[in-house]
Length: 352
Image (cartoon, rainbow, N blue to C red):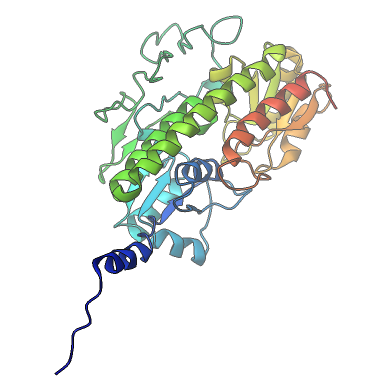
């Protein structure tokens, strides 16, 4: 007769404790700054993956097979939205149909700004923005106002009940499309905080076992972004009001948050290179505004901005809205925002 081996209760519990913890969700992101925010929320739990490699242009990109496979294996996809990566919408629907798709332009607390006319800023007072950070013009007052507060919400922000402003509409798949809203939302650290919170909430829903870790990481990350914003304010304060042009109209959120304003952009979009007529127009605008700097980007042909600046006396410097040369991970996002401020200030102050 076979004798049963009795295992002491404490030994059985020890065996259970030795089992590996459940794997973190497979998280895929679109651009490096979003990857960095996701990495901050997942720190100590897991690591997200990114589709776009450093230096790639978000508006037009062809995924490699390895990137498509990464998307297909995803449990959660964090991406800005189709306004930034129009090619990704169909890919998410076809390759990641079972994943949780989170378009961050729709996240609660993310405040959206409209593109301005001709790539120019349209802020109001002598600092380039109002004290309450209102963004308005004579014809659209209050409709597009951005009021600062604890939740940094306005009529274009996604409310807690997931309502949207009048510029958003749904397509046949039920996705919100935001019309003329600028998709470069990550360049405002207040939006960065909202994205951290949304990521933590979605991760907690998918992975309840690590919910406390996600929420604690997001809270710590938000405090870090508050400190970052204070540093950036100090960096840009001495050069407010000095004229500069950017490679394309991508920095509206950064400008609005920190009270600076570009005089214009060489290209209206990184997906629409300027022709000879626009280059002539921008060169004239640079002379008129007395532009001190023209900023090129790693993702765009530098010759366009250099051509536009010929004969104007403007210095050429670089701004990178995506962090092409930065180490991927939690530190990329704060390094990106602070680097933008420092490069802008160095050029406008005349530093070499």
